[in-house]
Image 1: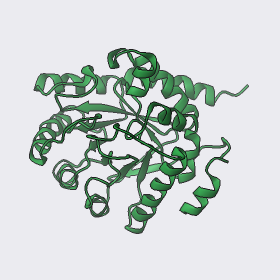
Image 2: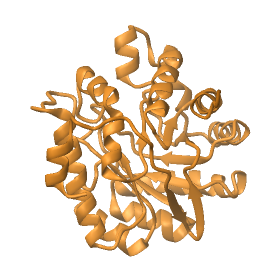
Image 3: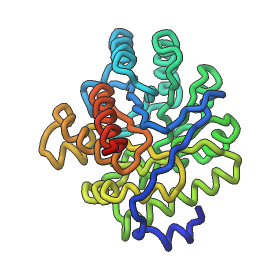
Length: 298
């Protein structure tokens, strides 16, 4: 959809029938006729959520086993922290961590689509070419590596396009928008147009909760999440145990599961196609309940 149309229509969208999409995962079509759960696998020592920290082989094996046992639909592996205020690790360190984790995933989670959480084009290339990673999940929306869009087009893999203001190091220092919903959607629409022109077809849109947004910004986007369907692409929501939950409730990330599940239910009712989560079992249960409500016939 063109940017002008978004400018005219944003703020006037009525909740209606949500689209069902599919993405091509190396010849396998993943259908979004039902929402999918993307489980988080961090091979970093500094995740903001203690339950997903760990670099030792036993820790990673245990985490993979948990994700598989709880029925995750996809696994998103990350090796470079993007929490607010985080510092970059070197490319070589990120690659080494990912090779370590991806070898274990190949052995312990065969058949489960793997996404790599990286904003670096060289890292994305390595993961796809050496390990057959199915999806590139770029939290920077191409902002932090100017070669990322070209790389995605060359690799011909699905791409998660995320909105961010700033970088992980500074994004929460003073985020500002005049009209957040309009500005985020127009930014995403502009990049979607660029990617389409480059031949990238399988794109998933992530509004970027917590990436250069205040608490108020995050809840403004969630309150109007259904408007992102104007972009006409699958919608990914990543709010699991984030500050928009634990700061509002005055709890720690470890105690933020209840609030996370409440937001997941809202996101599903507003048509989210993918939920990126730490707690797969709880999220799958939430999906089952919301789907029953949506599909209920009296």
